[in-house]
Each structure stands twice: as structure tokens, then as C-alpha cells.
Length: 513
Image: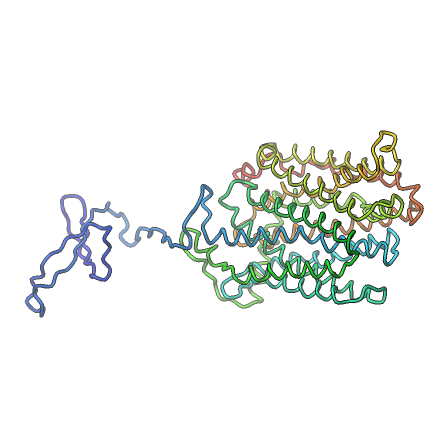
């Protein structure tokens, strides 16, 4: 490079070889006059442009980002084509996650009617099956720290889906009898283990992609996909169970769906996610496994020590753990005492998922503008009041109003569950915005794990409550007292609602939360 000086403005003249010629640049040719060259007629291409004076000649100006065809931006959200494929995989994964109620509905009916489990035993099985999800922080740390072929999200999705296929496939081959209960429980635990890996990696991918998006947009789409899968899963599950009475057939159909998800994950490349970030690929530093895990654990602990994250997270977890669940007792009451068929139970879950879907749309349009503390306070009060709907059913007050049990259960029995599911969305949006890059999987996995653990605690408290008040198969006379106790405990977290930030996620981030 040869630098000349014309007036007060430096002129830079660059010799460009013919093979590096760019037709978009203004170039001119000049004849070479070097007598030592064999071909005096050969020309060189000379590019001349004016640049501003550089105060520090040692620092070079940054190069513009490179853009490739695989990261071409589309739409108004700045999402690249490669990222759309990753989002498609995540969206389908959330849909399958919601569709898991399809085989689970058959499993619940089999345990309640085939094995004749009492309400407490059924609830214990339901919640103990979620134990693998308590270890989600470990899965999140692994996905943040360990790479496989330059990717650290999609390989975990593939691994989790494969475990689920093996688990539900084994359940489909086992004979439906009481002697296979230990093997069935092992398969259920492995299934939830695989689902945990898939959920953690999907949450981390969505959190990474949502950094430059409108607050809560991708998280809302994920919840919509989850609700859509739950709608179809509950509806088709109730129909299949009513018509076929074959749980193993439903397990096999779910395995086919999981196989399609595995194929989709194996054909989706994760590197486009990082190439689209300012045109520069993510640099993976080669370190030992122990050093990577230690560093990731340290970052997670440091993140959790921030009050902006620990305070709302602890409130969300406590608001779930404080309320004793009576799901097993209500399920047995509806199916054994009221004699409701599986289709009614399945359709009631469909109505609940439609409520979640509608609430998510409202959140995207209007509710995300409400200050977070005010929004969560309203949701918690709504949840407490929705628990009273079970009291109306148990007291059979709906019959006095001219509403049959089938219609009442179909329309209102899943409202409390829908509100509880929707309540988590604002917290996921907040944590996704506040977590540092590279710690998305660890933090969101920790939050999911804490919620799962609080749900297990809530289920155990429900078992204790059922035992104390004397609820059992054929005797539900004391169930109203348990429901009233639920309502009181659901209102208790409002006493420390100050731990929830008062402003929205975007405002909290600007304030340094």
C-alpha cells in the first residue's frame, strides 16, 4: 500500500490483483513502466479513495460485517433464514411437548381404573415422575459449556428426543398389568429425563434468539405452540381412549411423532444461529470439560446472586410451592364419583389450553404493557378465585343452577390450571432479557427446575392435606375443606409481592436490574 498526500487529506492507493476485482468499485487502469517486467503492456488495477485522517495509525478501522446467503434477513424482525429453521425446530418441539398429554391421559386413566390406585397414590406417582426435571440446571450448564461439532443446543434436543422414543416405545411393548409397574415407572422417569434435555435446549435457543426481538415475542410464540399441542393432544387423547381403550396404541403413535422430531433435529444446523450475529461466527475456546463446567457453574451462581433475578424467581417458585395440589383427588372424584368419561376430561383440558392460548395473544397485544408487579398480582388473585370453581362442583351447586356436571367440567374445571400455566410467561420473559449471553440455558433451566421442584412440593403437600382431612376413594365429604385451604394459601404470596419488579422487563434492563 502506498500513501500519498494531497493538500490536508491523505490519499490511499491500493494495488488490486485482477482475481480480486470487484465490479462495484470505481477503478482505473495504469500502464506499468517498469522495464524489468517481461510484458510491458500488462496493466494493474488501481483503486483510489479518500479517507478521513486516522489519529492513531496503529488502530485499524473495523471491517464491515460479512453477509452470506444463509443469513439473509427477512421480515421486519431481523431473523435470518437459518434462524427461522432453528425457530421451526423449537416451535415444533414445544408443540410436541404440549402433545405429551396425549399418552399421559391414557396413563392416568390406566393407573386410576386399571390399577385401582387411590387418589393419594395416583398423585404421588404423577409428581414423583417429575423428579428428573429437578436436575434441569445441570442439563442447562452442560448445554452452555459443552459443544458437539460446534453446536451446543440442537445435539441435546436430539439426545432428549431419542431417550423419549426408547421410553415410550418400551411402554408400548410392555403388557398392561400390575407386575410391570416398576418397569413402567422407570420408563416414565426416563421419558421425563429426555423431555427435560429437550426443553432446556429449546428454552436456551429461544432466549438467545429473543435478545434483539420485542420483549416476550418469541416466548409467547413458544407458549402458543405448547398450548396448541396440548389442545390437539387432549382432544385426540380423550377420543382415542374412549374408542379404543388401548393405551399402548397411543404410546406407539406418540413414538412416531417423536421420530419425526428426531429427524428434524438431525437435519437442522445450529451454526447459522451464530453466523447471523453481526456476520461473525461464535468462537469456541477449547478448554477441558472440568474447566468449562466450573466456569459455567460460577457464572450461574453469580447470575443468581443478583437481586434483579433472585427476587422475582424466588417469588414465582414460592407462589407454586405454597399451594397444596389436590389434582389426584379431583381426578378420581370426577371419574369415579361423577362417572365422567375420558372424552369429557380430555375436552376440558382442551378448553384450558385454549384459555392459555387466548391469554398469550392478549399478553402480546395488551398485557405486556402493564407493570409486571401489577400484572402478576392480578393473575395470582384470579388463580385463587378459580380454585373456588372446584368447590362449586364438589358441592354440586352447579346442578342447582341448571348446569350439568359434564358441561361444568368441560368449561371451567381447567381454568385454575390454565391460569397457573400462563403466570410463568412474564417471568420467563423477564429472565430472558436479564440473563447474560452464554448463560441462557443455565438460568432458564434453573428456573424450570425450581418450578418443577415447587410443583412436587405442592403435590406432596396435597397428599398430606388429603390424608389429614380424610379424603379417600369413595369418601370425598371433606374435599370442600381442602379446596378452601387451597384458596387461602394461594393468596398468601401476595404478602411479599414486592419482590416482583414493578416495571416491565425492558425498563428493568435499562435501570440495571
